[in-house]
Image (cartoon, rainbow, N blue to C red):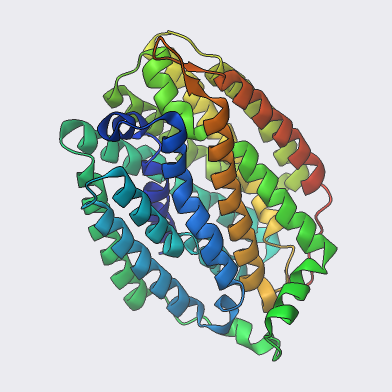
Amino acid sequence: MLALSNFFHIVDAMMIMPLGDVFIKEFDISAAQFSFLVSSYSLAAFFSNLIGIFFLDTFDRKKALLFIYTGFALGTFLCSFANSYEVLLSLRFLTGMFGGMIGAMVLSILSDLYPFKERGRAMGILMGAFSAASALGVPFAIILAAKGDWHMPFLILGICCLITAISIYFILPKMTEHFKELDSDRSPARIINSVVKDKNQVNALLSGFVIVLAHFMIIPFISPYLVKNVGLSQMEISYQFFFGGLATVISSPIIGRLVDTHGVMKVFITTMIISFIPTILITNLSYVPVALAICYTTLFFIFATGRMIAPNTIITAAASQQNRGSFMSFKSALQQLAVAVSALISGQIVFINNDNLYENYHIVGYLAIILGLVSLYLVNRIKVAKGN
């Protein structure tokens, strides 16, 4: 149920980016304006997670997930009726207010259910939902948009999300174990202090921020760049998500098991360093055969997704059960901020020249690599908290 919830949530979050060229033409907007469309969801998610810090631990995990998932489903459904850039921008912000908290709640539930020694495998399976969203959901959305209209993917996804919300109500059990160790003092100052005065939790939050910043630095413009600079059609763009997602459906659980077997840092260093190779190749790509371009993007999917499993396994273990919901909200808020900031930064660096091609994308790639190296240092300092 958690994987299914994550699946539709990720499809919605990712769907805007591969349709970038469609939106730029449809609304006659610039690359910078498109980056605002990408980041609006993340900015909203950042603010909603700040609110969630003070409330998520006070509710049954099931009820909390049900509430935010229903709001997210309605927001996605309403996006299908947008008729202008401004309306779509507003509705993406609304959707992000709910959808941004889904990740925090799913990780809180997962962390409550799985001890740290088994969490790598569980995280790998959950990341498999991310991969399945890339392999199945995103290409389906692109095909619908290419064959018909960009409104259609939002309509169908919104209906699927509403059905998932109903399934959560009937399938997920109540989850109130965290109430036993919940601090009776739930004042805002006490809640914030429980996180910010713990150096280990602060370092874990900073690590998560930098990792996501590095990860999403190049992602918003991969699809538009492949269309304009490499020559892929909108339909061929779906191949990168299908083959990349399919590959990571297989690789993510394997990497998760490797984390449990060989430790966080060994797997993290290996996947991070290897991920730099497809990052450089993609951001410096020119006209090449479609098959070669898809090979590069598939490698990026495997190792860029794989490098997220190990650090997230130990980041979830940086907090104890009693304030896990608050910590995860902090984590999700900062990561959503990282997504928004990365999109805005890349939108300011990348631009369309007089030949209708994107320039400076390689600079974004090198910046992503530098941030990836910084994250290696930060993650190495995280310790496992008691109760994990």
